[in-house]
Length: 448
Image (tube, rainbow, N blue to C red):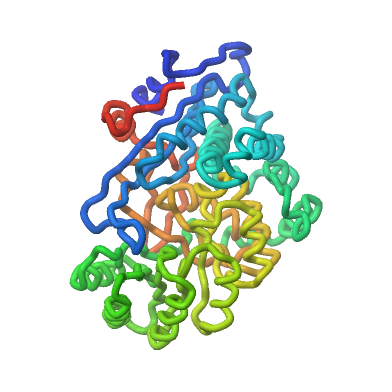
């Protein structure tokens, strides 16, 4: 960890510290960083977000060993400071505790935080406080991986089934998956794990989600499609949901023409449409052989159920705005989700991601995460999904626009993620990004 990064955690009026029993790896200090990154024109634009500012409410946990766990949750600018403030509140309960002890009962701790009456009133299990819980939880996982000197995906595979289940809050889903059933299921996967891990060969396929932002003109879309193919991608996503549906269909036609018939093509409406509008689009778009339509409408379970029964062979992907395991359970139960896009920066971090992944496996729904982290964290989680949970190898969304802000940006080779080797969850933000967050008025750190 760089000196600049550690300097942010030195005792000062901005930090809470705890110095008892420093001989064991205790969590001494916590800090939240409000980091916002404006994007070039057109980048990140979709049917709802016309001028996005990719932002992280980052939680830092420093232990007495000198390691700093970094946890992220994702927002789009204003309001990021509110998540930071909530994370500051939640992280106080970890001060003075050994990270190994915390992780041995993380599921119990998560439930206690999510159900703490003051926080639950603000949710429950969604909104600012749940995003904050994601940030703090992800920092815990990163810190444990760094303490053990392992990449997060290696740590997750090194943990035994009972250790994994101890990190999970499975309340409110017992009607479909109990703790005992999850434990038995993970044990049953053990004999096949080695073969599945070798099958990956240190790579995991990716798809390009940046070729067709809604703010790009036709020529930009065609150029980006050609570049994606040259880079090795064999799946591309296009943003739809224009005020004029004919524009969407025209862009869809030129994209299909640019990539040919053998490359997977997905579209993402970012919840823009009503149910009748989504039905209209799917009927008009059948000729383009869509692999999925993503977020065709508001995360309305019954609307998705009606839509799924009428648009075959187009399938539905969603999860970016499904905030917790209980809502995912309901989507699974109604059979209206063909691809589960759970995001560990939207639900309560890595732990709730694993819960949703286990449920998805029970309902035979493939997991293709949404990546508010730009793939940094999720490149670890998809390995666990395949090797330990038995999910099929799909592909992982790739968004390159913030890579310069990470210490170890994810690597893409021939259209696939190269599995990271560095200890941790690949979420360390670079020194310059942290300095910007510290000195810019828009990015003023939150005082505790």
